[in-house]
Image 1 (cartoon, helix red, strand yellow):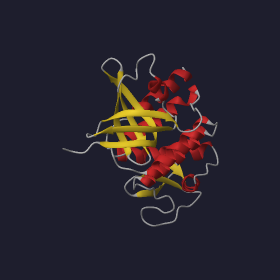
Image 2 (cartoon, one colour):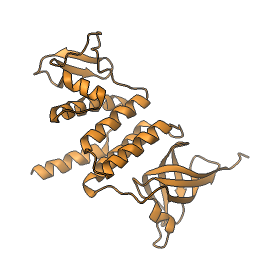
Image 3 (cartoon, helix red, strand yellow):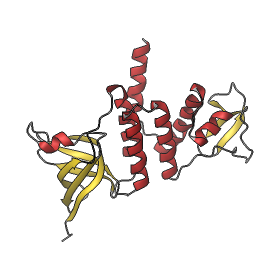
Image 4 (cartoon, helix red, strand yellow):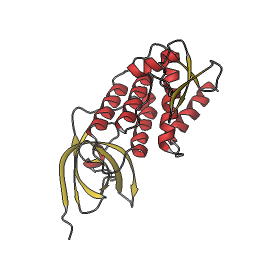
Length: 240
């Protein structure tokens, strides 16, 4: 018989959870030492459950679990540091980060560097850091850790990027020179800003978003991000 696995007090974040029967939950957790995994949390939806009150998104936790299968049983959870939460206006950005991890990381594949990137991004969102810049830095660094780092200093043909030029970004081939009116064109200086992770102005951030979206979409391979669609719908309502 396969020996039961017991893990105690490992740093983690809750990415998502959904109901299981009446008072239980299946928790999708992201851990520093064990990667992303599903945990069965019994009885946590009850009104008197102390464990359920701790299992909040964007709160750094220490989780304990045991079991023989991939979906182990959660046996303990406590705060790892002071209580934390995102401002309501930034919750969708936080859920976007969570969905990226759910769809781009491999279950059970430890990556402490990605855990640290996520913790840093959540802290920036919660402490008043620039929202757009924090998202773009996380996206860029996540792609690098996943092995999909961006070519931002030279074109696909090997020519240096010119600050005053215009380029169209191709996920598989890097930037290629184009005219300013070309669909998807970004400014050369914006590519330099993204490479340095320092965003000079609104255009720099807008171009970075365009480049990173193309790169992330290539990694998603046709899968959709629900949080991205929800954010787009909310912006349309605000403009209306």
